[in-house]
Amino acid sequence: MLLSLLDRSRTRTGRDDADALRATLRRAVHAERLGLHRFWVAEHHAVPGAVGSAPTVLMAAVAAATARIRVGAAGVMLPNHVPFVVAEQLATLSALHPGRVDVGVGRSLGFTAPVRRALGASSAEDFEDRLAELLDWLHGRGPLTLRPSAPAPPVWLLATGNGLGTAARFGLPVVVAGPLLAEPAPLARYRAESPPGRARVTASLDVLVADSAAQARRELLPQAVALARTRSRGEFPPLPSPAEAASAQLSARELADVETTLASAVLGDEAEVAQRLADLVDRTGAVELMVATTLHDEAAEAEADTRLARLVARLGGGLRTAG
Image (tube, rainbow, N blue to C red):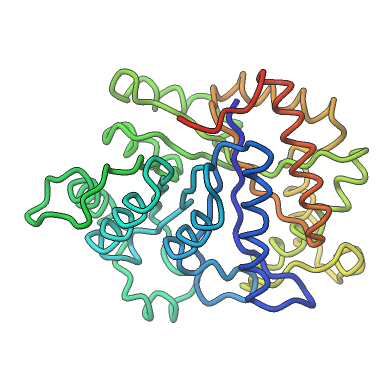
């Protein structure tokens, strides 16, 4: 099993936006020391809780701060960008850091209508056209010659249910999360419909190894509370501390959302997490685990990443850092 991290450059209460970006770089350096396979960054715009608004710029910073770990975007939202510009940015990264650059692309629009207007976002309905255009530019099939000249980076699709069909038609690997991880039928169709040898599944979810399930719940509670507020209030707030999260005044709906988030996470002591990860791989056939967990305490987060890396190394006979 390949182990990767998805870092959303989350802000934390009591710390500024710049520190969130510096924390992403520190986490990437630590991930490389642990021998992880890939470090993913995300795209969010004009929200206080996540400041990774320019994924290719942040990829460049991560790649410059590290030497070996693969660096990817999960993802670049194509409705927000001109495919030719995205291709140029990826070609530049690939030329500077050969063999280390990956990109996941998605169809999500900006979080609010003002953000979508500011981005000049297109409709998600033309996503497949934009995806085809991006792939043409990257593989030298466009009407212009892409510069700098560099090998095309691997492209993943961040897939919902309909997105799995798109990925199969384009012969692309997929990143799946949420309900798709519990439903084997859509993934089976994706494999059946993909060209031979092209289907590949990366599972993205929250994973947290701690001394006990109760401790893991306490540490993941800030992320769950922030997500519940996002869903119910249209906010995207910074991560509260565990104490702030425990004392938060939440509605019944928000409390239910918190429990849903915690229940969907793989958390507990090493034996519990190992068993649930083994079950996940059996159910989904995933070859890579993209861990999306963010903790308020950076030192606790680094320790959790270390414990998970050691556990996966024991499960999979060692982590691979290339391929």
